[in-house]
Amino acid sequence: MTRPMSARAALLAVCALLSGCVAGPEYKKPVLEMPVAWKVDSPWRVATPEDATAKGPWWQAFGDPELNALEERASANNATLAIASARLTQARATLAATSASLFPQLGTTDRVQRLQISANRPLTNYKSPNYSTIQNETTLAMAVNYELDLAGRVAQSINSAKASLEQSAADLENTRLLLSADLATNYFNLREIDIETDVLRRAIGLQQRSLELMSARHDLGAATGLDLAQQQALLDTTLVQLDLLARQRSQFEHAIATLVGTPAAQFALPVSERVVNAPPVPLGLPSDILERRPDVASAERAMAAANAQIGVASAAYYPSVILGASGGFDAVVLRSLFDAPSLIWAFGATLAQTLFDGGRIKANVDFASAGYDATVANYRRVTLVAMQEVEDGITGLATLEHATLQAGIAVDTGRRVLDMTTARYEGGASTSLEVIIAQQSLLNNERQVAQLRGQQLVTAVFLIKALGGGWQGESLASSQGSATAR
Image (cartoon, rainbow, N blue to C red; front, top):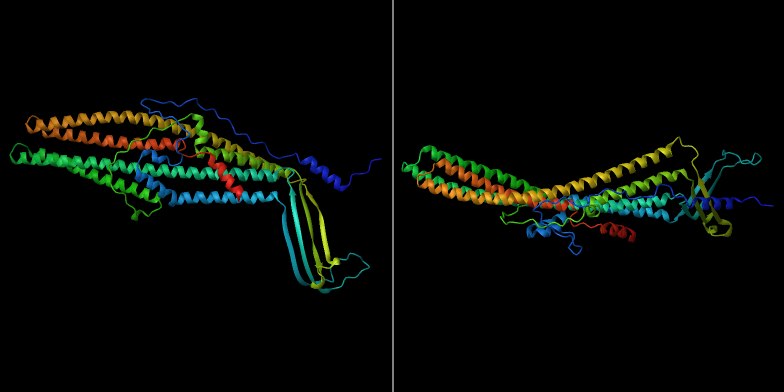
């Protein structure tokens, strides 16, 4: 004969059956098609990536001490960076709170009260009348509850929180990268204006000397009033351009002030015409972008978090089992609280299973699955944009380097033309208009060289940002480790 299965044995059988069930799909990082190499055009300066190269302060490669100091100030005082750091702290707290579900929950119930029992409460026995009584009650008890994670709901919630923490860490690094790149871009634009302003000032000095020469020739009757007026008009136009450059410089200066966390009215950068050259940028392989850009890492961690949310939603299909136990003392008077008859206890299990919900669980699973599909599409989009930005940076630097060399040749040629035209004018063989044209041509060429050098620096910053700067993916693991240590 076989004996019928007891309730305890049935519960253990259910637990054994469901313990191997984990709701939700296993997360697999999608594989993207990546090109074998970048399209590098001449005259590209190749630099080999080296693991021994210092990571982090990528801006130090430009060799500008003032930029280094500004970057340090921005890292310490920028408000946007502080916001991203606070969100990372929130993500750590969320992971700690979610991980607490792995442990039993212990609580205490202490109650001291005087109460009146109703005489009109429902009867438990028709032959036993109810009476209204007033009495004291003192209760001291402790209870422990633990949810069996049969369907993996808790495990998937923790996986989602871990991925979200790592995403927040990547977002912080991406904010830091964007901040440092934005600061460097504004700084190099400002320095380009300083150099361009110096070009204008030298041109103004040259034009003033030409104006004095023409004025002297006009007094001697060797130059007409038209010659004098044309030279004066050129000088006035150049002075206007100088004022416009001053306005542009103040805008870049104010932007830098905001980035370093200083009121614009209290911030000033001294003028400097120091020439800074763009450093060689190590490219690596296109597949390196998947590990070298924090926004790509953030998009990938968002996929992992969304995949875990599918498991959390799918766990609702399975029963929820909570084990509980409690014990303590309950008495009418305090002096008998710890007597043996005052002892109370209870233990057992609660199993809850949804039988009909009108499609609510399925709708939640569909919602989580669609959210995962969106993160996959976003991951692909971010990676494609990253490759586009790198190619733009490579092409831009190669083109600008060639253009700068050509513009330098044009400046040398313009100087020779101006010298010969001025000498011919002083000898009476050229007109004042030829001198003015030569002066304007030289000024335009010199300004173009200054602008191209500034664009080279800005494009180098853009390329470094596109390659992920000095960020390294190990910071995700360190962020998770610090949260676990808490």
